[in-house]
Length: 328
Image (tube, rainbow, N blue to C red; front, side):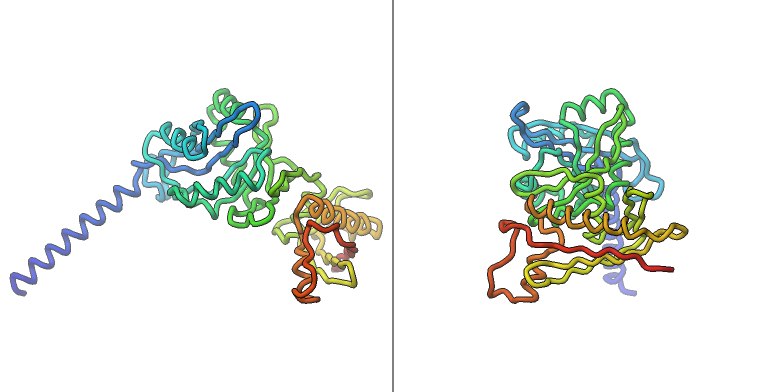
């Protein structure tokens, strides 16, 4: 080996060591790992943005299996979302890293207009949170700060409940016309996932009943069991296949379910009650600006796009539902 080759090998080794050192420096605990972003828009009472950051400052590398740190909360306020976010970051022990930020928590007064404003900031900032799960909190910025001050474990409890509710939550990039988000509430000092879900549209928001929330999740094809308290006992869908067909001027919705093992086959009366609930949920979402079953697309697929488009600006079309369960 010539002297020039040896020199090149030593140079390459040195560059590798420097690169590894820089990588480890960038990925170690010199950063505050933000786990969730909490946004409270201005209101008539509080005319400023409030931003909360659920973060951890691990003792080990942030992506190591033994990384552990208490979840903490810091908040900031500002006339704009950008200034409030900057103010909140000043409360972090180290520079913010949003690499593990998977959740966006919004106030229940939020509309899609607020989300559009958030998207603009998130695209410009290093948050890169367009794939974050969206949830709503029935808490003001002041109530959030008070709960954190009264219970030092509140941030950890909040993050745990968020993780449990996340499978029901939509991604931020899905917020084209509407979003159906879980709602977190504070009960006797403890945070929990409410049975109701919040429908967010461009003009406002609507809280669905617990039964409507379960049916909406079922119609959207969300995984997991869906339970409905009905006369004669609970009925649980373990799995369900939903099909929609355009019939004349209306639509036929068919739900073919698989019940939980060991439970009785639902009665005809229970199936009728579920059919009524299905129609009620579709109509309520439609009246509040959300085409839950994409009826407009189903109509266009059958009749073509040359005819007048069916949108939620029109009256809700007639919907007929049929619910049946597989026998096994």
